[in-house]
Image: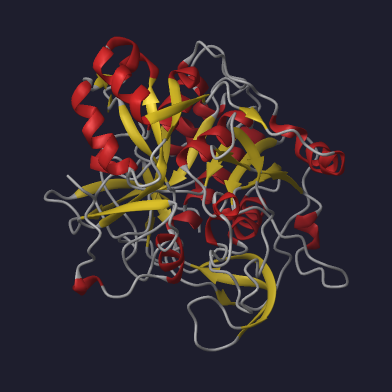
Length: 488
């Protein structure tokens, strides 16, 4: 069955981010109900156990694709000496998962035929090997999937749910100085962080508290495959004179977490390449135009020696199977060899007005966060929602630190003036509130709590945060009730 690439007319125009990414010849996509499933056209993710146990699958793969390694074995590209500053700044993300563990069981293959389509091929190869129930969970995973792209939506909302809106500076200091004593570590996997330039210090206090880390993208165009450094976030990376649609996303989230939990030690991992201009680039350059599930799961593993991982991505998968790399990453992080016992991963539910499962939020060991409206009593119009989510909090009209910009913005018709502050809508801005609340429980406790225990305390209502319930009956056949955390 070939991918369906016809959009229903009633959905209206795609958002600008979607338009750019879907024009990339290195991507394929499938319009499936209320979702666009997007993937790298030439890459497959394969469960090693399935290939070992199914000779037909092994033989078929060998004829059409080249194996490049696993999530545990693919190495970083050699860094030039002038890039050492980045490694020093980043702490280099040194955790290397065991090759014999779950991450070593997810293989990366590249199709040999430039005209082949990973969605078609994955569906065809699945017939040669049985699905598998992962140990210790009810997750049913396939033998083969494409390498999904982790951002997009079928309508004008997308990720995030709206364009940012200019906002005045706060009447009172937005960031309280950290108190002496315990702190908690939060690692943000997002678009990166944009430091302010002197003499403008709209959020200079935040600049001093953020450690910025370069993310990495997977390069299978060269042999052997390697992890290449991502470009840093910027306001106008493509040079079209407009504020990029996702620019400042990580800056906004970093400020929100620091505002809600002053005791947070913040690290921001920049995974930014998915929205730069595609015109005029050669294939090697086009390989870095988007982030994939493999790249984000890799970042999660690399930087897992922390208390909370705030993952800013949500994406649907082909035929609704769980994400293979994220399932493997969570097996590592909840296993005996995890760098940090009890580390929690928090992720947004997504902004597609859907009850369909979005990943990684839908994984049982990930805290999936939906959004209420600004009043807190119902689902926000954009928010995904389902019993696969763990909680909700307000993600509409959220206020936080942003960038400086005076001019047009991507998808907008009128110039906008931003002076370091903005309001924004999206489950991407509900999830970091939960991350900050978990960090607050950890930092304020006299006990030696694990992050997972702090989450349980928070959800129970014993963590100085009121917990009520919100019901939605619009996105599924039966009403779905989620705990609402009152986090402003």
